Amino acid sequence: MDFISRVAPELKQGVELLTPLHLPDDLAIERQRPLPPTNSSKSVQITERYISGGDSKEMLVKIYEPVRREDQKLPAFLWIHGGGYVLGHPSSDDVLCECFVKAANCIVISPDYRLAPEHPFPAAIEDCYAALVWITNRAEEMNIDLSRIAIGGASAGGGLTAALALMARDKGGPAICFQMPLYPMIDDRNVTPSSHEITHQAVWNRANNLAAWKMYLGEHAHGDISPYAAPSRAKSLAGLPPVYTCVGQLDPFRDETIDYVARLAQAGVDVEFQLYPGCYHGFEHVVPDAEISQRARNGYLDALARAFKR
Image (tube, rainbow, N blue to C red; front, side, top):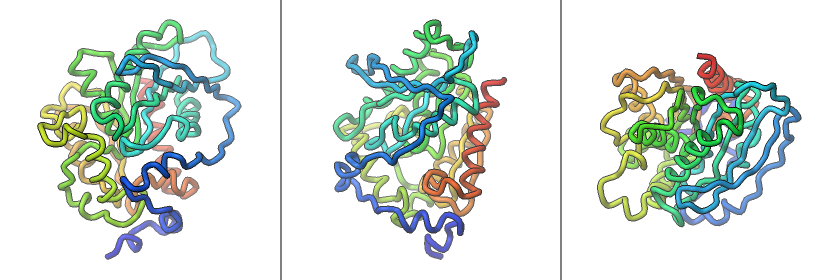
């Protein structure tokens, strides 16, 4: 059965209209592609700040918070954008981050971490860790509840989320109450059945995944791969914060996500997981009005809101 025939009917037109991406050849062109216009929410305030990144140089972070804030400490959510470790910018997730603010009554901070191949591993995870430390250090200033700091991201952002949870555990902090690595890019080996199965020019496929991992790992690709680069390689997942994740059945990351979920559960980590049939990588963004897209998005919005109420 070919790829298109397996796609959920309400998602077919979306994947058929996608512009094919061929990495690394299209990298420069894709980075220059303008973001589609969006309508900002009147209830969410967006500001930009520059903080010290993992290399001690300035790094942009975007901050999303309720316009009307009562004098109470709010939870904070570090959201890490996707893009295969080689693409993306916090602004591409403006609408989504506004949804997080409204759904969970929280502050969202999204870092503009360094991208490969110009900045291969460990640049991105060092920047994300620096952002997490910055949030905890500015908790008083920003009126943040230190007991309710969560992290999340999708695709490569999900991979960085999983890696950040491991790094924070191993370094002894900062404390994370919840992690949400959505359809995460966490296994550089590309040996699972789904990594071989998805070769169609969808949002993400085997060829692009191989190319992106090669650019991200750089010189590290020829030695022992750190779990902070590819979290699937972590020997132990014990002691990690509770997890919510999801993945489409036609996503190349399907099997590595399922394996990671099983290992988390076996390690005693509370985990909630959803598998969406007929769905490809990033489907809820490609066809946002589809019923299954709304269900998936509401699923992780609700999961974040519940995590902050524990």
